[in-house]
Length: 177
Image (cartoon, rainbow, N blue to C red; front, side, top):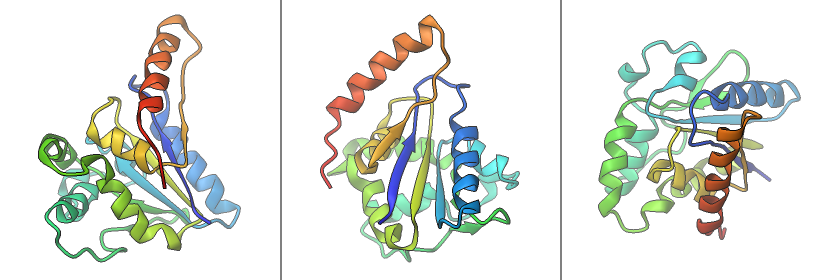
C-alpha cells in the first residue's frame, strides 16, 4: 500500500527539498519504489536531482494537472523521469505559478493533484511531495492527498510561530480518502 507524504513549511530554507530528496533516495536504497513530486514552481527538487533546466522540461506536474483540469486524457507514467539513484521524479517548474492562479476558478480545485496521484499510486510504495514555501492552492492540493505531512522546522522562535499557523491550516484541510 502506497503512502503519500507531503513535505511542507510555508517558510523557505528549512530543508524541504533536501528532506524530500534524501528520504526518497534512502527509501529506494531499502528496495522501495519511490516517486518524488516537485510541487514547487522554483523547481529546486528537479534541479537538485541533476535536471538543471527545469523550465525547459516539456511534461511537468503543471502540465499534467492542467490536462486534468481540462478533462484531457493523461497517461499515468507520462512525464515521470527515472533517476540513477533508483527514484522516479515528476518534475516541477515555473509553470506551477500560472497553474496556481488558474486553480481559483476550478471545481474541486483542492483535489486535482489527488486525481493524478490516484493514477500512479499503485506503481509505488511511497510518493513524496516537495511543497513550495507558501500555503497556496498547490500546497493545499498536496495536503488533501497526503496520508501524512512532514514539517521540517528550525528550532527557533519565529519558525515555531509559523509552525503553529501551518498546523491550523492543515487542520482545516479535510483529508478524506
